[in-house]
Amino acid sequence: SLKNSQLPLWTPYFYSGHPLIGIPENYLFDLNFLFLFLLRNVYLSMNLALILYFFIAGLGMYLLSCNLVENKKAAFIAAIVFMLNGFMHSFILSGNINILEGYALMPFIFLFTYRALKTKDWVLYSILAGAFFALQILSGSLIVFFYTALIIMFYFVFNLIGKNFRNSLVKSAFVGMVIAAVCLSLAAIKLLPSLEFTNMSSRSSGVSFQEFLGQPIKLSNFIGTFVTDFRYNDISGAVGIIGFLLLMLGLANFRKKMVLFSIILILFSVVFSSGTFVADLMFKIPGFDKLSNVERALLLFVFPASVLSA
Image 1 (cartoon, rainbow, N blue to C red):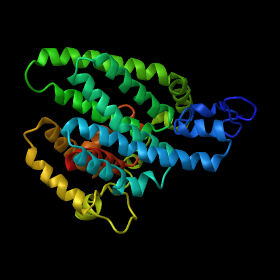
Image 2 (cartoon, one colour; image 1 turned 180 degrees about the vertical axis):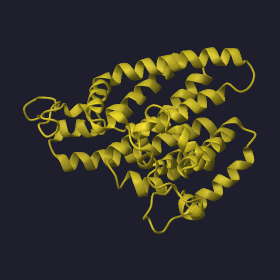
Image 3 (cartoon, rainbow, N blue to C red; image 1 turned 135 degrees about the vertical axis):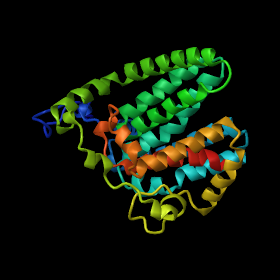
């Protein structure tokens, strides 16, 4: 299609010619697509995109941590933990490139949301957050999109705690509306065909609860799941021995709001990914009822764990 100066919108291999762009997991309008358009080489394009998104993941966590702790060395450590954890190794790099793309954009989305709620330039940062949310959808990273949205929703609620509740509520409402409007507008070219495709496919009725559960983590294997895992057979969120020690030291600052928020997010990740009653509740939320394998909720662990290590 690209050689014919056309967008690859259709494929004859699904449902007698369904839009390729409508398949939710297909990545389009990302760095991989740009390299394909410029280089016309599939393998070179995917390798370049893989390297750059891997770097972007670390860069995003570095910039986020710099804003939170104002220490470049600590931010560098957080970036290393975010790039070299068990979740990245066991699930993201061994999976599809679209998962890495969404993962790499998570720190930027949280950073822009944080800045929107904490600074006067809330319109600019809200637009940027919405644009990066849209990039997650366009990259076909809907799995990471839902978990990122969950983190942002948690932070919106958590941000209301404290003084000036009314002002915080009003500002959060405006920030949320701008983020949603920008995201839906920019991602509509993929989101609308994806919704149509979902209604045509078996996902229209959602997944079974057993498929949603998948293989929940076992708390009996706490060390292998959260600290260090030498087997790499199962999905892991291990941040390494040093990373975990830094995380534990970070808990000493629990009086700081961001540390407390990270702790809450980690606890939620543990009870969610282990298939407890929280998984039952999450299964009833629209969007999550079409996902599978709750062990992927370890994503909600590695993100705040990187912040706490800083």
